[in-house]
Image (cartoon, rainbow over all chains, first blue to last red; front, top):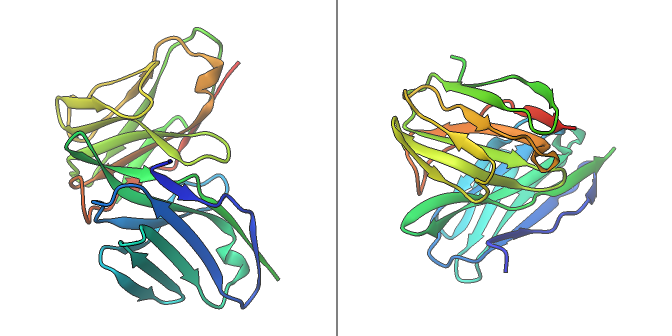
Length: 113
Length: 114
């Protein structure tokens, strides 16, 4: 099992709809979870972080965490064409006593006007 | 405030050549990282450093070397370039490591080995 798994997509969503991105992770002890957005040819930029079970909202973005089921998701409401990008899930995974930020392969999201 | 600065942005190398990717940060961060990203893939950690004089291997260190003589700089050295090292390289930094810590990325260096 991969440490952090995401559906690679592509995921196509009509403009104005809700985009739902999912991520599962292997380390039950993980405490920190992040969503990065990466536009083509650019570096990743942090858009959400979440540390506790439940929902965390920031503008049109909502991160959801369920530690018991080991999944974290990102909802994008009122999707805009500018949201078209690859979304990377990142989880702090314990590795020989250290925590390492481990990335999934990313989900490519396309918002259709 | 420049953040994390990488140079060069683009480079073509011939097989067997050597080069150094430069990385500097001006945020006084203790931790610095080098990742590589292959097309359609996530980021894989090559090396990281927890402070000046201390470095450690990540997930894919073979073929690379690093040094950390100052807090600000963390260069990545490719000694004998191979086609498998064709990738995009991202340098990153953070104040500390672990829960709740945010990593800041440089703009990336595109490397092609032919």
